[in-house]
Length: 309
Image 1 (spheres, rainbow, N blue to C red):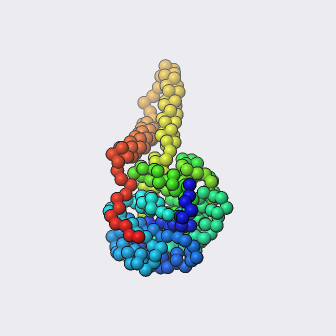
Image 2: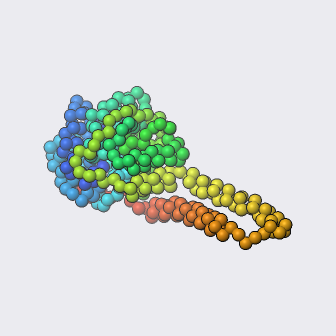
Image 3: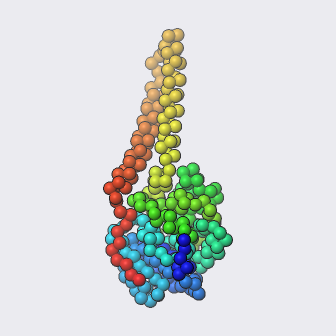
């Protein structure tokens, strides 16, 4: 149950090597939410630049700024979980640190959530990013429809507003590999989205790359559904069935004298194809087992080094 003394909005922003963006981002958030009770929580994910120094200075300049510094780089979703465990707001915003998400759109998300939705995603009709990132977002979205029952047409945006009741359930997750969107759909399907503009990065270069995209895909694939294992089982069953059905055919071919030593190319192709499927299935199973092993050994989601305010 929500306490009456909570702030209206909490904003959680994971920070990695974005020191030159933080002052402008903080100023815009202060202007966008003027007149509301809110807090801004920066989670420094062990940045290599002076991001933490900037956060400390901003916390002295702005009373609404709070900071968490992690002892080691834990990844974006782990940093977000760290922030969610320290919020005091009734509605929680998660957004990036590069000003591609406009702070003035927070009110748009807020107003939509007030209509009764548990989560409101920001939908970008045009994204100011590389083409491969657009493809990755589209592909992850399609996979999410299959694996976590994401409603069709809803964009899994990294810019979203979440009601406190949903966040209270999300932070109960103690696994080592959180995926915020996956956890959201584990809790609720009462979600919506609003169209907003996507902007170019304010300063610096993106910290997002292909490897991180693959990691997100693996978290989605193996962290929140067993459907990939079922698909692997189905492929294995179909392959075995085809093999058994071909056995009578080749036996008949042998006895009618139609047997010839041919088909070298076909055999090689089948070996490569089936061998690849076997290795893929083993890798998939290994990914599940590896995650279980790390979770059983209590690999921490994050380790906090410092906190301010």
